[in-house]
Image 1 (cartoon, rainbow, N blue to C red):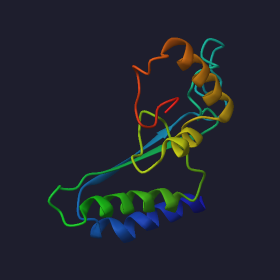
Image 2: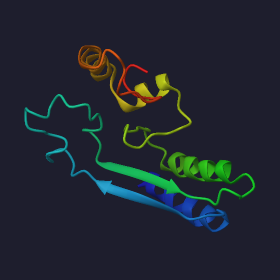
Image 3: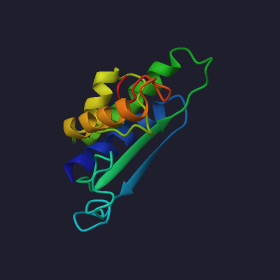
Length: 139
């Protein structure tokens, strides 16, 4: 409850001064008995690492490119939303955070055992790095 109070206090205090549009998505994963948290055996070894999460929160902000300091303002606002939740921060590769190094991203996007398993798979099926991005497995 305190995390939600902090979150909505941040929004009510700061959103009116944010110079652009923004939105948040709050997705309920369903709790301990959901299929997300208890996948069938065929999906149990997937790369998705947030299976123990109750909620997934995604924050977005856009700002006109000509805005003075706009990108920094947008990033600072979104980081403030994240910080206001005051809970463990995670990430998912489909929502790339351009401020993270490859090593930081790997630590946030995957558990260590999952990442090591994915590196082994990548070395086998993509030894030439055809499928590459700055935060991808093996980067």
